[in-house]
Image (cartoon, rainbow, N blue to C red; front, top):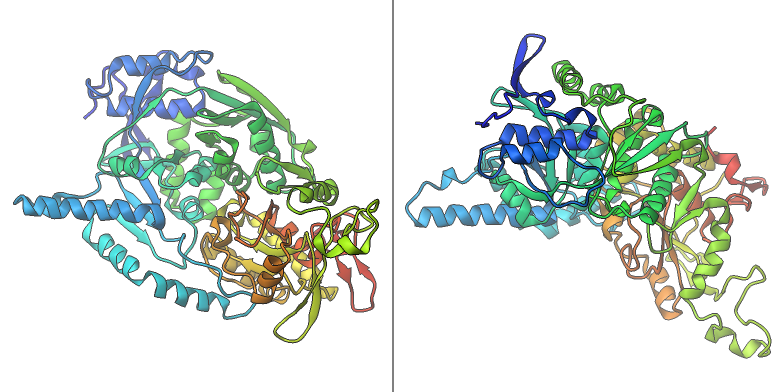
Length: 601
């Protein structure tokens, strides 16, 4: 029960339902606060107990000085906790251990339960061992269950043993995509109260739900356990960076291009320990799927959260994903009543400000080892030739005897190091593997697979490639691992699945896979050639992180790209290919096929 020092307790009527709410306008100064701090303010109003959370804490947040350095500590009580299996299993083990301890002390073990709703999505265990075949998904599922039988049995027990604890089973999706599509409420209801949906999660990319207007971020396992048991998270009132969006994306650019541009900007600006909040006319022109992609990469920005306020786009997405009309009506009524509804013309009080005209965003990738190292797509091949020098000896041993000392041995005419190695595939076909070969092309990660625009674009690139007679190069391990079954459902309904299959992007699983390093082994002959000849090969993935050694132990250089570009690079087969100018392959009549020929119009 809140101490209610500000007389903020009130009632909100939505249709036939009435809810208890805590009015923000009862706190002086609340109207000028950014959206994210209004959410924190409501949290304090509702949980004020006169001890851990006092009227002084509430006044401090209401009177927030945007230019001050963070110094005031507050206690944030998240509405729920979300977990993935790697970091979530220890939390459940601890709860089970607590039950054992209570039982030994003569108490009732059934009293040990989460006080805040807790949800776990099993997504970190699937490995893309098998690929490129119609039964790859089932084979990988069978391998996953074989490796994790005891863990999964334990989690199944946990779901039945604990109240307010749900487990989304393996082979369903990625935690953050399942969160935005299904679990997130935007406005929570519990015990007759309505209040903003907030959370902490045991995964850094929990911030994806920020795109839906839900404040939350990743924490450690102990903090998550504490939150499950109703304990608040201690934090300093943060600085809030306002990121103004204007204009609209131009045709041909994607959410991936946008988020890589934002990553580069925010990394240069410096946002560690800060909230980032998006505002301005351009927010209304940014789809919810694009907002979720941006929110997902908050850890790569360096920020604690990267949030968008609630607006009509939020409501449309809730309807699209099957939320009830009562829930949608509640979100709209609550947000408007509490001043949490987006006003595109408003200029809230921010600590710092940046601005981006969306029309200036151009096709980009990032790499070879950091998400913030954005490369304009048109410059990618040239940049590779520079970057690869950090990964290979320019003078490869194989070429030393063949050239005079004044020449640059083992370097092709275009300036890139070269050490072609003949490889024989199991079916007897032969090809040459060289520095820059794309050995992994993965449509992976909730960052992009949650976004229907880029996923359909990838499928359409595959369709046009098949119609032109193109397929992946034989050394490329191609995988499709969506963040939920929603993706494969709309692929099937649109008749696009066969085209993805024909270029090698068969379904391998619903989980994180390549994005967290679960890419599985490269084909034996490729791995042997890479390791025997120390080749600097590459991966291209639609993920959020590309640090050295993360994607695959055989792969030195990793690039983040949109799903349609992942398909394009699988067709090209090498980072040396300038896919904006060079042919990706030849059609049935031997004519060159360029990216512009297969790019969706």
